[in-house]
Length: 428
Ligand SMILES: [Ca+2]
Image 1: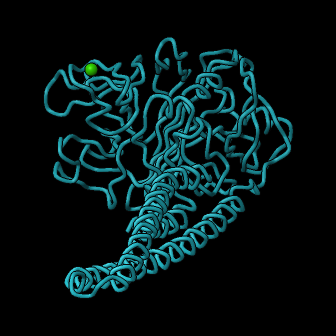
Image 2: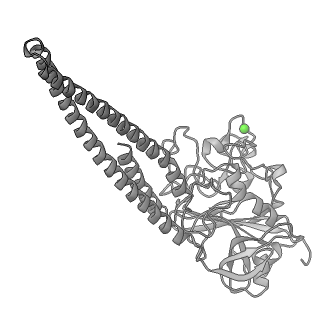
Image 3: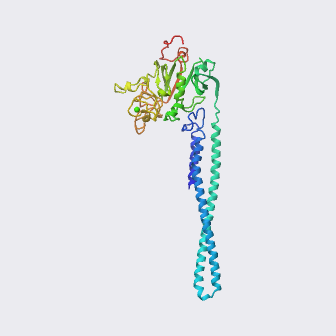
């Protein structure tokens, strides 16, 4: 029965809702949905209820129609019985010889009709019971959905701590005295409204604005253009969740200032080793230019310069896997240099060339090394790749992409082994 299926579905929905309390959301409800929240919104519940209600209503309508039909049949049968009884009485009053045969056949008819009435009454009783059970079930489902709604509403209330200081980026916030990493609102110069970011701020007052975070594979990075544009995943005040801040926000942040930004890519492998690569004058172009990635030069780091491409065996590889100057591609927006669709093949969004030597939005492969077989039906290298450190069949455990104004690099917070001092922009 439909209501049993509905109940089963609702149970599944319950388990999904609880299992996903910190997981991924479909992201299709509203573009910026999910930020700062621990629950995948009530949209799923509402969608589901809307989906099952019409079929339940239809079932009830059908049942009511059947009942009415049976009721009509019973009425007409009863009328017939009355008529038969009258006829029998009439026959009995008449001379017996002529009518005995006729009368006995009428009595047979009466008996048959009475039996059929009894049958129909039993059926009506059965349907009544069923209707009752269905109504009871409906009531239970309604209560259950109300409970679910309540349950989902509660954690969706944003109770995470948002720091009071605001600024145009995290360095600006640190400059105003903030010394705690956490969630802050920023409003880049050209932004029409402020938005939430995770700021990594150290005791020396360096404030990194974090653009991307992978750490456990909980968020699916196989998303479309709109989702990459607006951002997806979850921001958390304690840096425990995965997300893509969004191409539009990256564009607004990286192009606002006369002081260019350093992009730092931080990678942790499955042995727990962390390395980084820095790029000077990192910028993400406007949407009209498909959020093109540009930087002036590799600033340094111990992870190597994968953005510059990698020679996988063919001399042309390096050229075709470099990323500087590439537009952003997603499965539904192919802006790559390949006759096929890199983003579709690799199930990600990225500044694809033909296709990549660096690929931080790839599929999360547990454990590091993975094979063509693990990569899915196409068998392409679709992991979280930084080819100059680990090969393309090794998927990183954690990644961070974060930016800081370049002048902070010589002040302290940005200093790490392998970086060269910035000296190209005077005293900014
Ligand atoms: Ca293409």
